[in-house]
Image (cartoon, rainbow, N blue to C red; front, side, top):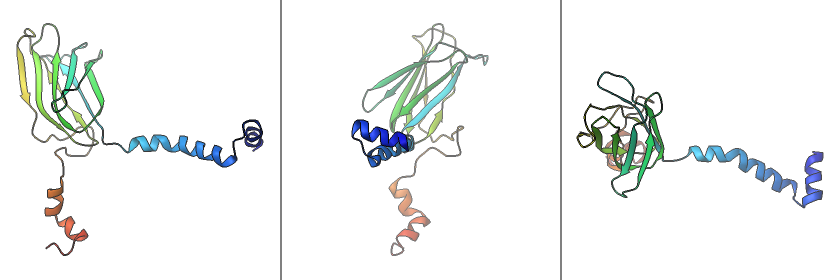
Length: 167
């Protein structure tokens, strides 16, 4: 308490301003948790199942052409956090292996998508393309990725609870 009074005397701040600042500092992490951003992660292996470190992973938003690049760690794992909703293409490249391309990756809000990559032996000029358009069951949580849009809600029995006249 004496510290608050000393701060007021020294700087002219009131107790309410200091309490507001402290409250804001406490609530900031909670506000950051309320986001629509997702994460893509996975492990890169070769045909024998051995992990491959140092693989260049590029995630491209096909609508905006903005890309992000990461490298796999010593355990062959990669993680791309803070991915906004949209349609993406993921490319994995390593020397001595064929390039891996996964297209039509639909990312919705607040999901963790695991994409395991197996690189085939060969040159980078050769590529293996995979279409990832189908809904994928997350292995990182209990949510099924695939989305639930407004039309799905209107056609669901739950909408009758909110809009009883719509039968």
